[in-house]
Amino acid sequence: MARCCVVRTATVVSLAVTLSAVAARSSTCRYFYPFLHPFRDLACSSSATRGFHLYPVRMASCYDSKKSYHTKALTSPYPGSKVERSKIPNDKVDWLVEWEDYHPMEHTAVSVLAGPKWADPQIRNPVGRTGIVGRGLLGRWGPNHAADPIITRWKRDGSGHKVSYPGSGKNILQFIAIKRKDCGEWAIPGGMVDPGEKISAALKREFSEEAMNSLQKSGAETEQMEKQLSRLFSQDHFVVYKGYVDDPRNTDNAWMETEAVNYHDESGEIMDNLHLEPGDDAGKVKWVDINRKLKLYASHADFIKVVAEKRGAHWSKDLNHGAGIKI
Image (tube, rainbow, N blue to C red; front, top):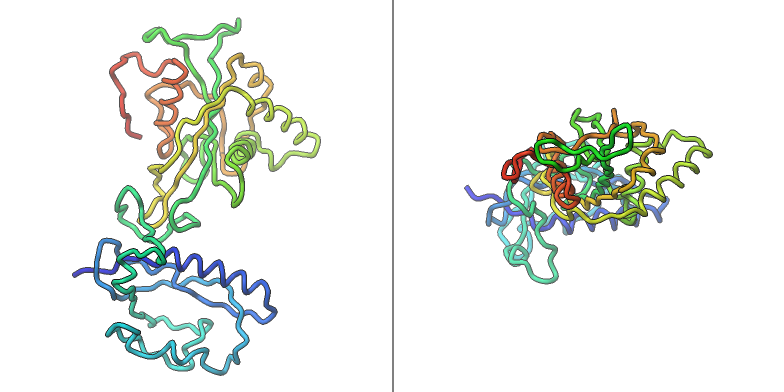
């Protein structure tokens, strides 16, 4: 049986933000629970189905808590349709009243599903189905933006000479990796971009927090670290990747997008004075030799391969082996 497409997700998010803003200006605020998790299936054409999960945001209300907040909004059928609303007793209107048996109809008009300019677009994974709906561990509907700084240097011997791999004859490139606390996998020391934050700032902040434990540093230590980081992040760099990431946290309605940037210390002088210390989401941090045997979190190994190829570094002793690796 066909199920409903979710076209109004972005509208709901916008509504939640608006209501939160209104609440901030009022001294008589109540809790309101808009439909922030109504998903059942995205590949359907029916205009009505059942299934809501409710989450709270704040909104202002000057209504008497003993009265129904609305009457016209309870009438059936819904305008322009034959969809009947669930019957709501007056004492169950308030969202503060628990009602586990509340399973209202979901309805989005066909005219809205057609995607007119005035309607918000559907929020669904651009690659395809993932087998789970909602937001999972991700905070935002749609894309959740991250920044992944890939810090590299050449592997050197005790005399300071670059070390090459015998099989390929190419120099070995190293990058700074962290071991994630949440899943135990090795990864690039990146993280989420804060609202309004520039990518360049996020790259620097995430690296300092996860690979240098900046959140636990004293004022003097932070000042010295900032000088080192300024030099590091002014080095030769290029954008490795920008876009959708194949991440285990992705759902049908929320997914990761990142900008991975490689900062390379050609001489290694900056890196020699850089004290690595795991912090924030990182359990461990270390320099790792780059090669095709790397097993990293999400799509990180793919990013590292691009860096190795761009820098002309060793990746595999068999030049035809390892293309399009899966991680």
